[in-house]
Image (cartoon, rainbow, N blue to C red; front, side, top):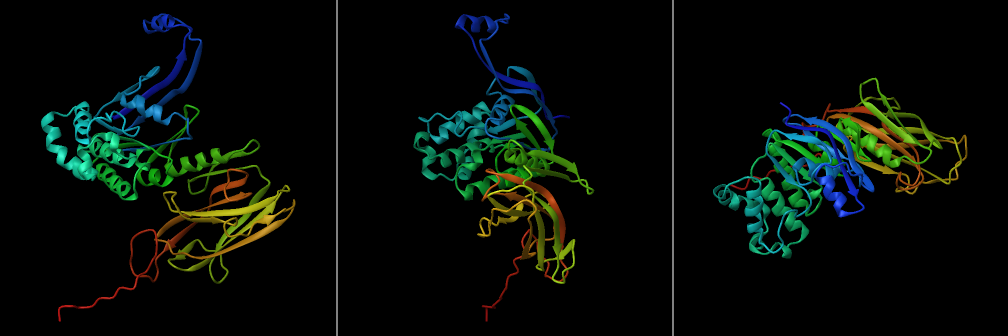
Length: 408
């Protein structure tokens, strides 16, 4: 059974020459607006029970508007939303909170709107207060709260009862690191129990660690729906794309989707990973010293040339990345035909698993000013454990453990 179905959803903001025309339109008469601006249009997707979906897109793409229509806090202009389950939502910070009421009173009001009885709310109130961890402020007016305190109470009440669908819109970016960790732990607990997640965030790590699917919005429409790593690679290419650059998407032999973009003034010609004997390797032992060699050719004159690289795990989260701007090794005034070999030595202090390398040829510290070439999945390699003590995690950080018996 589909838990949430969005069919041809759209939202337009309209202006009329007079209020009478607006009123006539309300009654279904064919009055044409003087202005019409579509924020979202032709949005369609289905969500199955247990899925975790990330909504991705630049500011103004319509992400928050979409969530508001799904939760019913904003009426759509066209299309429909069908929900087969109870939704708990954390949208705009403090949305629905009365600043003159206390945290406790706002919790009672919010939980009541969610459909819970006074008896259920009173029973859950101690747990909500304990989870929010704002102490005596819980019985003070919300207008005295910081933004982080408002988020704590909003999250505590929205997740006091496990919903079929949990919707979160950027709110978790507010507040301290401790509560963010606590909130993500509760979200993961809900996921393990079968809750479906719909989350909007610019945090690539959060989306990729929580979600098994992502939807990319651009100019109010869905332009891509699929694997979170693939979606974020395409999203980054869109951000980097300039007037003369192109975005290219192709399927590699291993089935992964590679996204590349750039204006083409410089390109990576060759790339390889080598062991300490100078041999090309695909499998690397935990902690081994390796060397990444990247050959770059210049096709057009540029003021500066910077190489950046990032090592990503199988979920697409960057384990480490830097560039030659930060290492103060910028190449000035390279000319067409110039070739450079970048040799990058490092220890493979990673956990067991598969990793990919992304490369960027840019003019300075980011790809946002000039993107000559950006390439995801430029190289794949695997880390295996041959001779290290067994460990878990994404980082090899071997400790020295000492044990002293104190009972004698």
